[in-house]
Image (cartoon, rainbow, N blue to C red; front, side, top):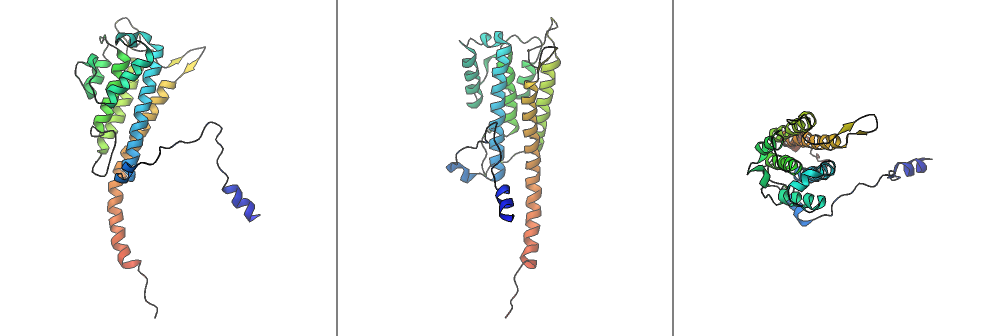
Length: 232
């Protein structure tokens, strides 16, 4: 019976909707602490979420990707991805970056590609909050308050996107929709995931320094209290 119970405990978890995937180990991980690795993965997931949002928003607002001159929606997303990851500017934002770019992209009078400009501005703000980095190593530090502020900025941006109207009373962009025929809140879910990752990373960053102090004190105590004593 005991053997059967142990066998049951070791059975793999069911995965009817897919299995969790992790990246291949790399040499650069030797230069990363646990917190560095968490921050790198969180940044990668947040940027991927933004690119998914861009594709979804372009699908519902096809006039926007055409404003940028791209021949297709997919190429518009690819151009946006390259601009974010290579830290290039976004012409429609008039050289503005960070929260200034976000304010411009969400202004009712903005006439450029609002989808690309909005997603680029959010991504640029997130990268700025992480010290202008997308990968993190032992020499890098994160500011927990900046991460917390970035989470609040994403909350504000999502609310503005859902509530603000242009001069004709239309939504700035078609996104979430609830009506008698359908209920589509997929945009809100993506924003929620980004906010949750930022808040968790802010907590982990704060915890790292607190735990370092506690660990140092535990080491001092353990040096005297947790020693084996001679028995002969």
